[in-house]
Image 1 (spheres, rainbow, N blue to C red):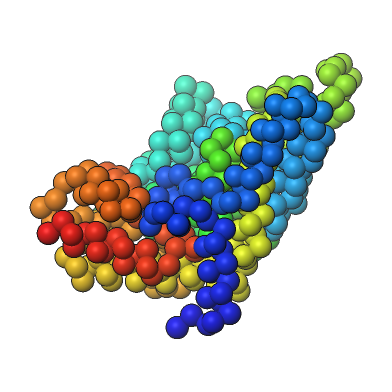
Image 2 (spheres, helix red, strand yellow):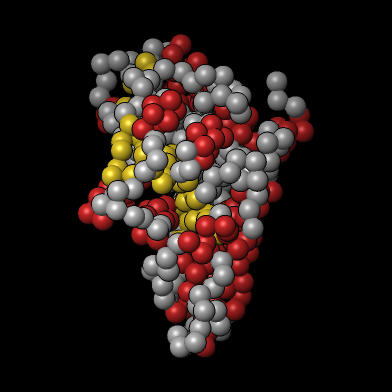
Length: 394
């Protein structure tokens, strides 16, 4: 049973989400809805920009600085290790282009990664970098021993997703770091399907790089994300994607005699997406308030418990899981997440999705299966609404 104080907390969080008044919303692995305060912050920006032009620019820039601070708190990092990027793809491309590759180097990654965590690395092959793609297990999980066997003296980087966007499988990042670092390789994490709902403290789990757009689990607007670069690597990376905003004293708008910023923000080369960053700052501040970064807050366990409830209800009502259940499904030490893919026997997934939308339930179809993605503000009544809508098809 959830403690009454915690239940009050989740109800309070739910009240911040206008989407819950209309929908049982389970599409956080695609695009998350905006909290009320985020919509208000974006509206305020729009009014300021339309009424006063750039007069409020210093305040907008200060919001971007606060977003870096939020990103640092989220990861247990330093603000200087956080760059604000447009999306996960740009974060991955930045490291792929900036990394000091040599002819004959190799990179290892699972073959079922989202395209954004494959294509930038595969584009390095013309520079003489070998991309070694390791197939997942039949259950969709990643066998880290296979990853380990793919690493040799030429391997400079291992790149993988923290949580699989289709399988929902959550990988133990400490194990990945240990096997990669033991061989002298670094670790890049596509964190978009876990960051904001599962704690990741880089002081404890020594990943080298991570990227995540804010528009999924972190409930921000599209086009605003985070790139983490461990500070000891900054000076080994090249200054790709450089622009006026990459330099110290950038607002003097000259390049002669200027040095690059001694922080990850040197990769924010051009004008900022202030409206996106202002919205993202509001959303991430809300999640941090409810302890998304804190293993003791119960935030992640809330999601895992709701996901297990949904999984059991789906199976009890005839649904088949697209992937085997996770190990220790309600534990932070397990492999579960808020993502569950399933099918309704003899029903076309797209037809089911259309029916569910008409019933007030939002989810996605990925790789031929229905996919729900449960957040901490969801509650059992949302899951019951899903189940009742499925029953209504029979």
